[in-house]
Image (cartoon, helix red, strand yellow):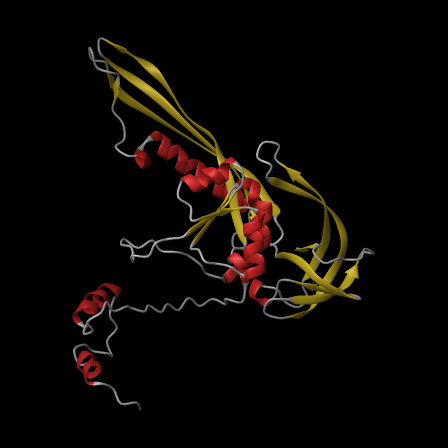
Length: 334
């Protein structure tokens, strides 16, 4: 056994290592056991009981800490035209379009902390989705955000009935293929009856919530987000709780009857899976934003996976007479 230092032995003698402590108790012990002159760190290990090799069991998330660490966040924005100018004026560190995507793709440049893209750039940014570490993204916009107030004031006092309506339109996009997996609208409504006063030489005053979350617009927004999430889940998973979304990727190479895809065990691919290979015939774009909202494709063939590696897989053509090409879309057949 390795010989431990004096400070280590001194710290360990202060607590019972055989005892199970609660999180609260452990946090209380942390400052008591400090002995270094610098700011020490704490490691937390959690046993989740999941298989990270399976796409439907991968656990990812972020935690917003109450205090910063003194590090400035570098933001890159994928935009063009007026949107690019707005991003620069807002203080973005890097702004660009196709040339910025090419820089990341060719040079593996990732000297930034946060990435933002305008809707019209999603089809371009989708090409570097795997480099950015994002498989699926949701893009959309608020299409309704209104409050309709009815009622009146008589003798300086009255009642008002306000109705807030919020609507969200969004799409789930596969960053590997830029394919639109689902497109839904979420809506929410909230009503509130309140007391209103009209005083001479003073504007109309209505008594309501103190912050946005408690306001009728806040409640309508929360309802719209919940409705959007439910509809998106149903559209992707078919209403089956716990079901995994179909895997998708692209054809990386073709050798005779063998087709290689750019997804593998890390993405959840297993031997025996069947993928439909399709070719994009035309991109359907939003006439207002020029964003790709759908793809018109034609089926080329089907392949059955026979070999799987960490980041790639290959299989044999088992149906269809078409000849797959590099860049064709691959969608798991359910």
